[in-house]
Image (cartoon, rainbow, N blue to C red; front, side, top):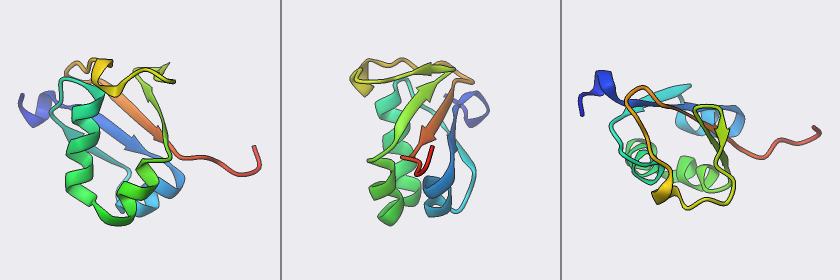
Amino acid sequence: MEVSQACVVRYFAAVKAAAGVGEDRVPAATLAEALSAVRGLHGGRFTEVLACCSYVVDGDPVGGRAHEMVPMMPGSIVDCLPPFAGG
């Protein structure tokens, strides 16, 4: 898959701070592949924060579904949401 047809992985709050960017574009057929790809881009603290996140794919919360079972399409948007305080 070309990067122009990749999914978009967006970061918020602590995971955005750990990545140093607001989003990445990665080729992936599943959510598991997308998360593996972004871990490879950032590693370290980012990986720790990412492990605490909830995920929303194309507006649909992933919840307890296995990441390998969540399909990605070219242009899919993954929101990585770390736990928020206060809300």
